[in-house]
Every structure is written in C-alpha cells, then in structure tokens.
Length: 163
Image 1 (cartoon, rainbow, N blue to C red):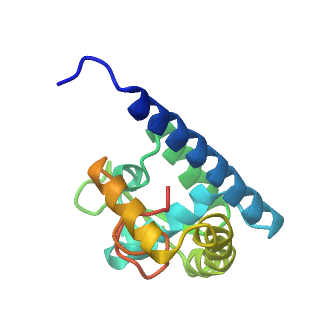
Image 2: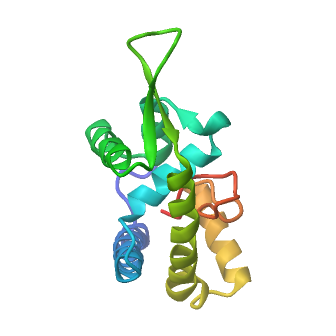
C-alpha cells in the first residue's frame, strides 16, 4: 500500500469535499427559500417515518443520521417542541425512551420532499445524465457509500439523506 495519496486521489478528495459542501449549502438555501426548516429536520423525520411503528431510540436515530449525539438531542428537542415528534418512555427499560413521529411530522416531511426533490434535480439531476449518476453511485459505493436508489425519497428504504 502507498504511504501517501497520489496527486489524483488528493484532488478527488478536495473536489468531493467542495462539491458536498456547495451542494448541501444550495439545497439548504432552497429549503429556506421555500419556508422550510433545515435539511436535518427532514432527515430525522424521514428516518422516523421509515422505522417500524414510526419510532426509534435516539441512539438509533443518531446512527442513521450520522450526526453527533449532542446534535441529535437538540434536534429531537426542536422536533418535539414543534409537535413533529413525541418522546415516549420505554416500558421495558424505564430509563430509555423512544422518539415517535407525529402526524404533523409526517405531513411536514412530505411537504419538504417537494422542495427537496426539486433542489436535488436543480443541483444534481440537471447536471448529470442518469448514466452519469449511476456511475457516480458506483464510484461512491467503492468509497463505502451505499447509493442504491433514491436515498432521500420519502418511500425509499436506503440511507436517510442524499448526503
């Protein structure tokens, strides 16, 4: 194995990080312009809506979203405060809790998808053919990203967000 990355690998890394940042910023701006909360809210609501019974433990949500625990806790607090999710005590482990999506949370997630999917098309889909997008998914899969199907779609069963 090489002891240092090649110039090409380093350039690919830099581009990947720049594109990720720019596209995420653009999508966040599109959601904001449409009057929606941040993308993390959509991701959390999507994961909760996919979970059996619409609920999961906070640690499970944290793992699915790939954000730090303290960020997940604050996000859950905001979702609960807005009536988009509810906390429920675990009957088997009184110290544990579940977070459950509410009807209002399901409705917001569906409404956000309209703006989110438009932003994905604008910032990704319009710039790549379907064949190019499939090739990109294949390359990202080699880096350890599961890119099967449409990750952010409300009815997809893959990862939480197109991140």
